Amino acid sequence: MKLPINTLSRAERERLAAGTLSDDAVEALFHVIERNHRAKVRAYRRVSIFVVAISVVLLAMTVSLTGPTPAALAACIAVTLLDIVVLICAWYLGIGIFRHQFNAALVEGHPEFASRHQL
Image (cartoon, rainbow, N blue to C red):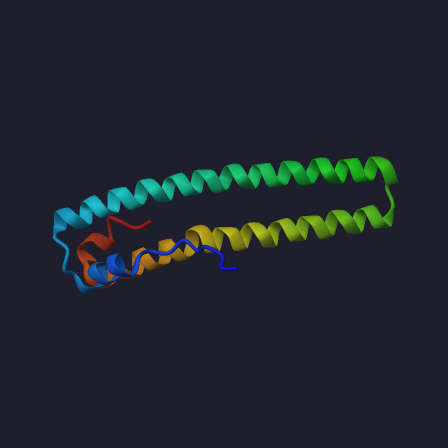
């Protein structure tokens, strides 16, 4: 099974890094990529809120059934840590790698745009 990781396509990365794109093409590519990036960030925020809400509901149900016991506290801590790790990994794989690749290629091939067009 292969997990999909959001990356900048190799062709786009090579063209950006080589500096072969015209200024208009870089500008247009940036606006398309920025729009997609913002949509992914909004979706990530929604999913993060949803994950936290589900975790709170499930933990509240657990505590209501078991009472305030050390096991319930351990479950709360474990679920909170698991949520944090999963959300950090999802951010890195879904948004962070793509942003880093685009910014690095832009700095390498078109440094004049790098100061204005960072994701």
